[in-house]
Image 1: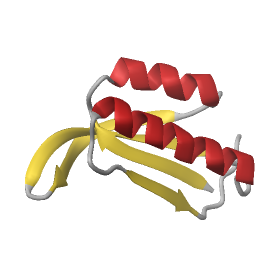
Image 2 (image 1 turned 180 degrees about the horizontal axis):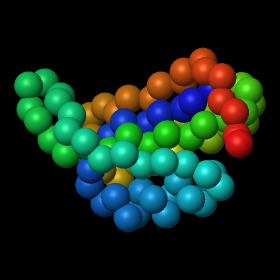
Image 3 (image 1 turned 30 degrees about the vertical axis):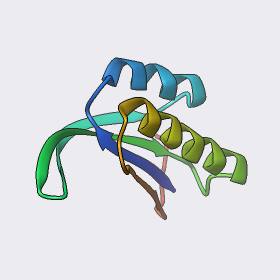
Image 4 (image 1 turned 45 degrees about the vertical axis):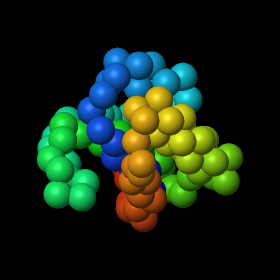
Length: 89
């Protein structure tokens, strides 16, 4: 499973610190997003799990997303839970 949080690229160092507090391993990708015909710098935080994430991990992701949303003063942010086969080599 992969969990993603997509948000505006504001306060990215603060966001990195918040994610690092909750998860040991993650990736942050920088890009360009659109919301209501407005383009803005965006980041996608990816957290990969070997298997499915637990209810507690899922709750942590949603709590983290709410925290980021409030800090960035955003109307909405996207959270995705994607079923995938992940192998750590």
